[in-house]
Length: 274
Image (cartoon, rainbow, N blue to C red):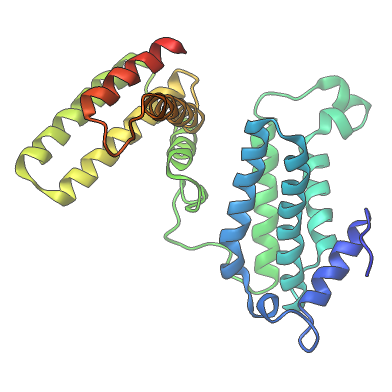
């Protein structure tokens, strides 16, 4: 089997890998749950290639991510649920429907994207999906399901906090400005101090989480994405620590032998150098 730019070749390859008698034993034994972590990992590797500005890696990582879509679609086809073509049809239908100002008739295009139209279209899609599940005999709703339960649990915690806050804000459950959130953060820090004083491990974890949640909320009001901000700080920390490490090596010292004071002095140099 030869490589190809045609998506059908990738679908054929995945089908061959999953063939019961002649396929790859590892690929055959996988299921949706076992593959899901790889799907998330590949998405992060795409983001990493973008952050590094490496377009060669981006090409390859996008291919790896596409493979994940094909993999899930192949398993769904084997289960008699849907095919890769159905996935493509679903997303093309969604994109056309959600952009009437681009793909609609002359009247829709001239009207532009009206305020609230995006949410209206999404609500209609949700209702149609619910009806389709009912028609198949599936219960589309968990009666204990709440307004915020559509925010995926598998999202990174900071991102999920942001999504939960954004959705709650749509129904008016939100601060009107950023300043009171600073007070809330100070309140949470105070409660964390109390938990630390008591040595209550469970409370410490709980109050620390509350503090992080409040910080994410502040970032949202300041139009700062917490995940992106922390990623930037992570890289800044890595770069400065590398400066310390390199400076120690130049002086004949090492990280494990240097004192904290020596490393702190070099850290301050690193801050001044950037």
